[in-house]
Image (cartoon, rainbow, N blue to C red; front, side, top):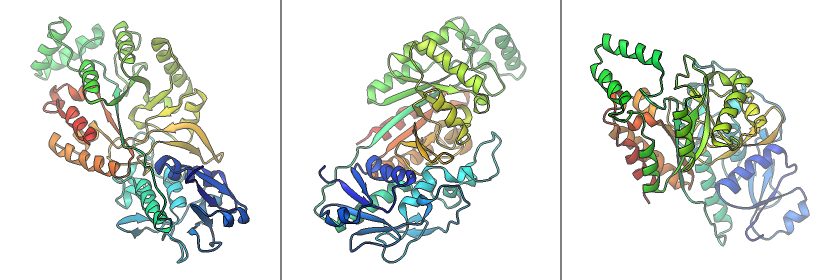
Length: 438
């Protein structure tokens, strides 16, 4: 194969294979081949590199830290240094062409190694951003694995100046989590009466009037923004995914009931225009029976197997949650991100496969990491639409520089321009203009 990179390493462990494929094939679009035969490597007169404790000759060489040749989870010592304004760790010796082991460092971040170590969990029993290496050392807002990869490519091209590289292309994926399908419609008589009484006694007269006009079909439900989303999908040629919550009613999951015909019709109509997945409810992280029930509900509505998932509130316990999803034949998960923070939880903006550290193998579940969500911008960071757009523009530029995939999380109510989302009605379209601009 033309321009195939030959990699020499004494042993091609599952960890080695996993991270080299992510960096060279998925990020850099460079085909690779491994060898442990010295003679084959020496005879190869094209693109090649070695990875180990010491170089074989004067080839392009990266000194290994050792993490990729281990088989257990240890409390690894990490010292952060700088490499051309980028943070890095697992430093190497002078013979190495890079000042750190890019592969071990990338594996540590991508496999979510730190989530397997003891730590304080957040209020939802999840790994918090504040415990992460990226947050503590201020690189959460950077896809450092992708940035490192392109710097690696630059060094490799200096060694092989005749090499012609064909990069991947930047992509933007817009996702919607639908956990409040409607504000007033489909709530049932008791919930409607209780909500109306509450609004009256708290003097929310506009809400009372809006509820009445919506239920009398004089006005569209404020959260029914789905036609607008599909219209914008066509206008900007944006890949759009919808994740619907189909759970029983709980304190955390208080959408309209999953049995309502109006809800089924909406999901079916959306599935004609965009890909549809399941927003698993709060308690499915620890309750496999609920997980199975909710999966079955969506499959009966759309008459096709459920392949896409996201966890409500970002509740994801590694590796247990992913094990359950794999058992259900879920192929793509869109939970990877911090609900209250912008940035790249796994330090990459390139979709990747889940690596199971307990069993040491690459699982068939593809992870799509998101970079930002509307609620963190609006409520956690308390930004104005203009300030939020500036933050997003920064992320867009970073992802474009490394030809990555930018993924956002929106909610249908954020397009409503109603109550707490007042003045945010055009924000989603502004984001599309920013993300899709050449």
